[in-house]
Length: 181
Length: 102
Image (cartoon, rainbow over all chains, first blue to last red; front, side, top):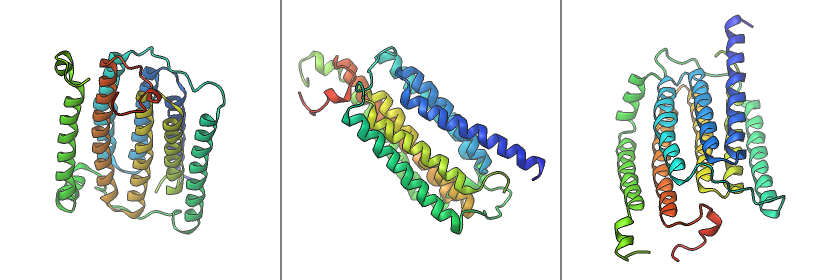
């Protein structure tokens, strides 16, 4: 095993530990502010994985858009709603908590079994890829030629979501005049 | 390819997805439910990018970017709902939102 390979393994394990640990923190922490900060850690660890999988542009977009813009929006709303708001777990092991944990564990077991079965066949080796695999130029070429329709539909989805967000968030005037309650 | 095989990335992606699913099912604060939804989408994104690397095709990465855009749209609408709840002085708890209209 070469020195470079050992280094990649070390980086991989660090990123995996960061991913799983921060994902557990998102679910387990009681304060929504800390959950959001843990999710930022999760997104950055995932960006490390994307770099290891030679998806440079997606990694950059992940850090800039997701961990930057989207999470800042989250933090603003948490600050608006009240960050020390503390809704407990449903309190002790009741059927709802138990059912949720069992369902999630079943989901994980199912996925891992399928991956192990598939790994026996063809997931062990990977293809040789081009040098420019995953750089912005090649992503842009694929996105704007083969997937042009998807690109345009995404722009419409984002526009509709932005309008919907404004409508949901700005109902104060109608409430004052006694319209929609 | 240096480092672990694709299957290891898939296992991590599945674990993140399952943890996110557990969060959606267990928590009652809609903000944390939205954060857990983000976790699920990101687990799926990791799997998409791992398979893109496996097949040497950029389509998976393009799809991951599309998922990121949809996640941003979902966050906008979800946070709009939370802000509307806060404006109407409803306690931030999804169990209290069992009806669409009061």
